[in-house]
Each structure stands twice: as structure tokens, then as C-alpha cells.
Image 1 (tube, one colour):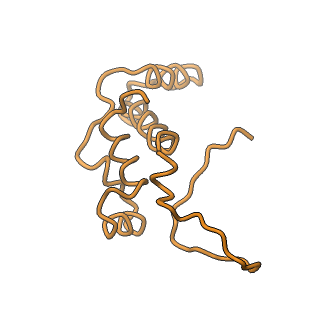
Image 2 (image 1 turned 90 degrees about the horizontal axis):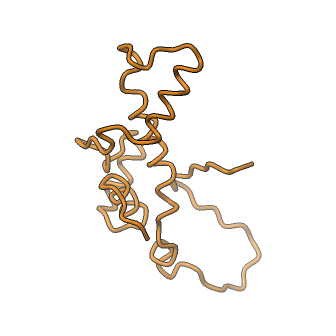
Length: 120
């Protein structure tokens, strides 16, 4: 696996359950992302940021104006966070939670954050 940036590593650790479980429940309620708190994970220009700047210019916007100046970094952080799950060790995440049972009813589990960037 390639070396992950600090905020992505913290997101992966939180997803895999190596962080404070009570805190993880709180961030879902509070709408915060603890692995990004106090961190500027994408300082400097990154190819993702330059691509966002290009898109903004191509749609007639000025990526340097006050309202958009930090948008390329925000978009970069957003994609890093949304795709952090690609770096998760599935075995560690499941932690032995897959098992056989003789049961044919639906099981509903609530309170599990989910997001997707499906190709379709």
C-alpha cells in the first residue's frame, strides 16, 4: 500500500475502528470529521487542486476570488475523505463479524455511516 497522507490515515483508522468508539459515534451526530480537525492536509498545489482550478476557469469562474480561493483544497479533501475506504483493510474492519447462522429473517443494523462513489 502506498503511504497515505495524515488525514487519510486518520480516516482509515477511524473506519477500521482503531480510534475512540464513543468519539466516532459523536462525529456522526455532530457532523464533524475528527481526522481533519486542525489539519490542512492538502497545503500546496496538488494535481486534484489544479484540476479543480481548471474546471472553475473553464466554466467562467475566477478560482482566485475570495469565495472560491479555498475551493480546490476543499474538493481535494472531500475526495480524499470519500475515497479513504479504498485503503481500509477489510479483514480488520470486519473483525471476525462474518459468521454462519441458521436464520432466514432480515437483520437491520442502524447508525452505520455510509457513502458511495459508484461508477454507475
